[in-house]
Image (cartoon, rainbow, N blue to C red; front, top):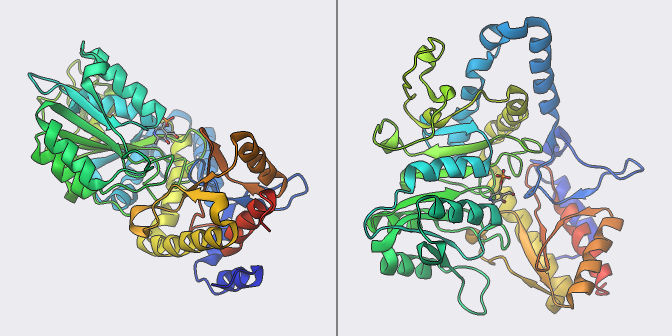
Length: 424
Ligand SMILES: Cc1ncc(COP(=O)(O)O)c(C=O)c1O
């Protein structure tokens, strides 16, 4: 492989998706120079269309006032429904199985209220040992909410000693072994620290065979890797829209509820009027009539201003298609991995699986030097115009996002890191 910058530029020039970069506003330094923005796994870049969609809501609010709920061109009472078809395609679901609402951890609690129902010997909630802290807090507090003890009823899946990622066969074996006492399994579609993509269909099938409900945190998976939640048979999933879906800081989250639960009246849920059937919502009746499907899990009036940027981003996704983006992503991340191997060698360890099927866009690197030296190398990247991120205990994550990053971005990241590590 050629390691020079001109080659990276030539790859960009030949790339048919390259023009999409111009539809995003990329962060700049103090002198107005574009930064190398490799942080879409944390906060996606701004789609230029987002400002138009936000302005449309502002204008409708200005000119229509309260009537905007019903008579805006994109009426606010049904605004969230406009997001569902594109979201459903991204997660592999029917439109009625998905909804944009609240935020990820709130949605996780709402899903666990309905789908984590400890009973008899089946009381445990299974998560991964290195779960994102918010998922752990949610899971532990749900266990305690049922009067149970996390020390006994929170089962943690860990990689084998000396390994950084989970093996599907180990996950399945644990489910088979512990199955009779597991009520619910909650795992990430893509693990936040290592970038490992889990085998959603295989693990969901194992969980369901064992009689458990199975839910997924797709924060790092949605808009990044292909998903097929309906066919996999997952009971529920939750995600955020501010990472690969470019919905902006604190954008509302998303949830999936499998169609087999769409009309179940026996499931407990925390109710609010926005989950009521739209046809009777404004009749102000005392009795809750849930909208069948994921919409029935809504509670409150959504923030239309906050949904608008997500809608803009989803239009981009619908135009290009996830499979086209994914193909570019595999190529870009593969290029980044090869450059890292060639230029940084044993100075770094890649925590992310090398198999493209088992990862998304992001790579996670551990620098093989004392923590303080690693941290100062990371801090040095900023001075070289690179935006990546640092996660304790000492992991650098960088994601070339196929919508707006290119080969030269990957090249500049590796070149800057090589300079910081004295490898150039
Ligand atoms: C894997 C994962 N789960 C949960 C969360 C929490 O999301 P929120 O703050 O939207 O609830 C995050 C946030 O980055 C995350 O990466």
